[in-house]
Amino acid sequence: MSTPNRLATRILQGLLIGVVAAIATLAIGQFHPATLKTMQAFATAVLDPLGQVFLRLLFFVVIPLVFASLASGVAQLGRLGRLGPLAARTFALFAANMLIAVAIGLLMMNLLQPGHQLEPGSRERLLQEYGGGAHRAMERRQQQPDMSLATAVDMFMPRNLLGAFVGHDRGALGDVLPLILFAILVGAAATLLDEDKRLKLQSGLDLLSELMTGIVGFALRLAPVAVPAMIYSVIVKIGTGVLLTLSVFTAGCALALALHLFGSLSLWLRLLARRSPLAYFRQIRPVLITAFSTSSSSATLPASLALARDELRLRPSTAGFVLPLGATMNMSGTALFEGCVVLFVAQAFGVDLTLGQQCVLMLLAVLSAVAVAGIPGGSLPLIAGLLATFGVPPEGIGLVLGVDRILDMLRTTVNVGSDLVTATVVDAGAVRGDHADA
Image (cartoon, rainbow, N blue to C red; front, top):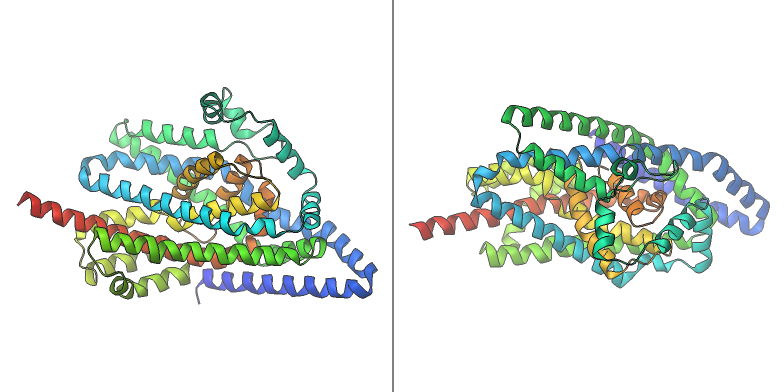
């Protein structure tokens, strides 16, 4: 069994142990309240700091990881401009694929509203649990001016760029919006450099991204201990109502992922590639299973390339261009998940995101998904940054850590399936173009 699978098993086992232990503690507390109070104090004094070590490792890498990954991705476009129509079709489909996925996810969260399943008392205890950080975040959001063109300019282009990155409070993350714009500008400027200089810059950015990904790996090694500690602490302090809320979120997110993969992309196959969706998904089933088991788009890439060549009969030039690029950029499942998490955690903390803010969230989820490393758990630091952007305590990501691994397997499956469908659609368009030229 591979290391990612062993880690996944340990995290899920830890989650189960934490839930069972917390429910048992609550049951004992019904007959012996002193025991419950003692365990709540133990959770505050010991388990919460342990969980914070895990979370802070993720928070450490938010700024450098977003910058390096996104700037490097844009810098790569300097080599793609020569490909003309193929590149244009590919990037247009990537963008449409991810925007549709996020829209489905946000619609599902708005319909189910899993965060609103929390009882008022549970929500208040949740706010208290984060030591006033949630209240401060909500106060900052209430002080923000109404959305306008001037406000949008200030959000994306503050006067003090470095100050916006760093933040004015050592207990809060900096602004991610100007960081994303700055990373895009750096990447765009890199495409204007001489080839050697651009490659050197891209190599440095990739190296920084790999280093930050390594720190995420350190954090994930703590997950089998930190996840049960955090879920136990939340349940014994807030109650079992959080389990219902989390169950609704998990089911809704999984359903949204399935709707995109087997609904939206089936329409693409039927209308744009003239293929039978049922037969197509039967063909790519081995690769989908590989993606599900490894939770890594990068690890699944060799299998995707082989299947595209041998089973789908795609042109080698198309598959060789679209699939490797898609493994790093076409993250529809990740973008959907990020949007769902931000809206769910916002609901849990009583932060209502307006329609305009959710439209901004769609765009940011797409951009941040592009910056996600193709490894298990790679999206966690970026989600923390998105939460901070919308005035939601980044620590709220702890609510979903216990089920993240399950949903990671599902969203990676959607990511890989989207890559194959996109390659198929691009190839079909290229074939029709050749026929038209003839």
